[in-house]
Image 1: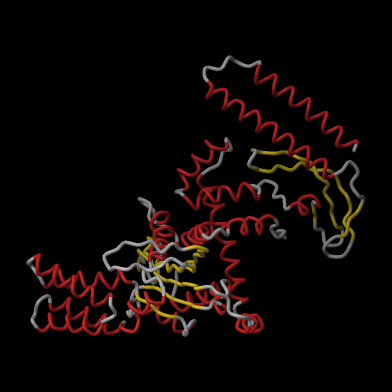
Image 2: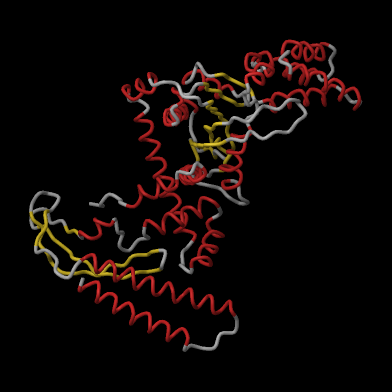
Length: 450
C-alpha cells in the first residue's frame, strides 16, 4: 500500500506539472490547437502512469535469486532500464535483471511475466498498426495512424506489424491443419448429432502482382486462392432477372498462394473448424474451374455442388453477342435460354447452343458453351436448388476476392514479394473473419529469444 500511495502522490505531482505547462503555455490560436495540445498532455500522463505502474509491479525489493530455465539458480544483478514503444508513445521503466552462472543466461522476470518487448513495439501497438496495415496501403496508413494517435510510426513498421499478424494467422491455420488430421477429433465430429445449420462453402481465385522469379522467369501475376464459409437463411430469388443479396452471416475467409492440392488441405482444415461434418446440409458454390470441384469432390464428396448462376448466365450472353447482330433476335434468344436454364432444362440449353454452332452463328462461342454446360449439367439444376431454398450465387466469395485481392493487394503500383503478399492477405482475411482479437491475444506472450 505504501508503494501505491507514493505512486498516487507522484501521479498528482506530475499531473499538476503537466497541467501548469499546458495552461501556462502560449495562448492557443484555435480550439483545434487546444485539442491537440490536450491530447499530447494526456499521452504524456499516460506514459508516466504506465511506466510507474510497471515499476510498482516490480516491487521495491527484488528476490536475491530465482529459478533459471536450466534448473539452476539465477542471481540478482541489478536494475536495468527498459524502453517500450506503446500506443501511448515511448515508455521507460526499470526492472530486475538476473544472471545464471551455470548456463550464463540472463533474464528479466517482469518482461517475461507481462510479455514485454523492450526496444520493440508492444503487442497492443502491433495489433493496431497491423489492423491499419491490413486495411490500407502502409504509407497512407502510417500517416493516418500518426494523426489519429499522435504516435509516430513508419510505413516499414506498419508493414512489419501487419506481416507479424499474418504470420500468426498462418501459425493458427497450421494448428487447424494438425487438428484436422486428428482421427479422434474427426470421429467425435462425425458421430455428434447433426445440427440445423445449412453451411455453405465457396472457392475462387484472384490475381496478385508479385516480383518473385522461378527458373529465371518473371512470374508476374499469381493466383491468390480464396475460400469462404458462411451461413444463410435468405430465400433464393424468384426470377432470373432479379438482383439478390446472399445475406451471408458467420463468415470465415481463408486464402493462400500455391497449388490447388495444398490449398485443399486448408479447405479441409477450415471446414473442420466450422464443424462441416456436423452441418445438416453442406452446399458448395463456385464457377466452373476444374480445380474447385476437384477439391470439393476430394474433401467433401457428399456436399451439394452448384455452379454460380451468374457465371452460367454470362456464357449465354457471350454466345448471344457472337451469334446475333440484330438486337431484337439476340434478346429474344437470350431470354428463352436463360429461362430454360433457370428452370433446370440444361439439356435444352445445350441443344440451343449446339444448333447455333451447326448453323455457324457464333460457332466457336456456341460450341464452347455447349461443352461448358455439358460438363457442368449436374451442378446446374437451378429449379431444384431454389425449391430446396439454396443460394445459387457465389457473390460471397467474389466479395472475398474483392476484399482480399483487389481492394488491398491491387492498389495502384503495388507489386509484392510472394511471402509478404501471403502474410498481408492472411492478416486481412483474419480481420474480415473477426479473428483479430484471437491473433492479438496469441501475440501478447511471444516466445523468448535464446
